[in-house]
Length: 73
Image (cartoon, rainbow, N blue to C red; front, side):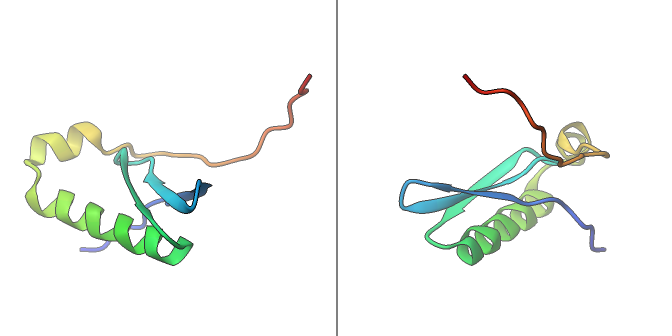
């Protein structure tokens, strides 16, 4: 079974950090593609190895990614 999950990737120093907010799992890589692929691998290992109770406890059903405009300074 496949499931669509969110990947948020941002530059951090010389590389990139990737986060899946639905499962609260993160990874990193030297490029955006590597960070995404490493996150996919981390998620697959989590779903393969974690007890069902932990998966259901950590997996959030609804995640919204949006932008906000705020005053700065």
